[in-house]
Length: 366
Image (tube, rainbow, N blue to C red; front, side, top):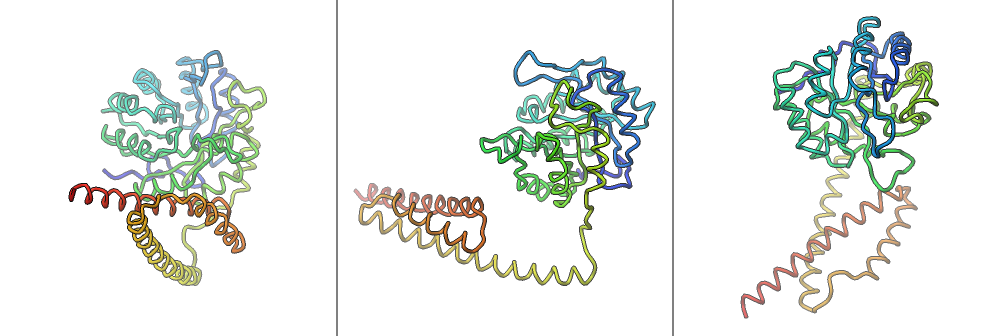
């Protein structure tokens, strides 16, 4: 089954395509006031609002529930905006569909549980409605793909993925760090799948939405989901990451929309640079292969001379020396540190395999 392109099920001319609305529907007046202001922004095509909001810990505002479905129906009638809500149970699906909600989205905390996703997939079987699927809270691409596949198997091809960042120990200035390589890999593995970015959750702060949105568009994501509230400071949930409709308009006005391809001349120059990268990559692969061959030889030598695999002092010295060399060459600290650790881990794995093989041969001969 092939994915249906986003502009075929949500027609839009202005780029980027935008979903906007409050983190939580709080009152009918708040919902309607926000929707009216958003309907004046050409980019905004879909109004979002959370109505079932179980919090990480009990005691907080957990949404007004199904009463807000009537408010969203009024939004659609009076503003022409499509509507979307998060669903986490089959009952949510039934209520939202019966109320005429246009699009459903599955949240990050639900996607981590294949049992919950399967229940939603079964509830969605036979219902012709688009579904947005957020990435799981933890950085697990397989879980994300698995959730998408389950919804596809229920007969849906109007699907889009939403990148909302991941929970990890190192926040690096974000609420949920984007770890961009994961959505990029998703696009590679599932070509044609529309990808929308949620900069509100990634940043956790309204001041970061502009830069995160720009990076998402530069990585060829097709749309944005931005939490928008008429009075963010007094919002009942996620007040720091919501923007006013006026601020949203400023953000959208300041985005630079780049072309996926340039002119003939720019493409020709770009192709020359790509050939240089291809040649360097080929050399790099050859060097890495040779390095691992040497690691294999070291494993044999260490086994023969009864030497431990890990030489901690040597590793510390090597790591420190390479980091200095890389810094002098302009390489980022984080990139080089990750690369060195990966190469070292592979070397250790190869030597471990050699040791086991040599030990087994000795045992068999004895």
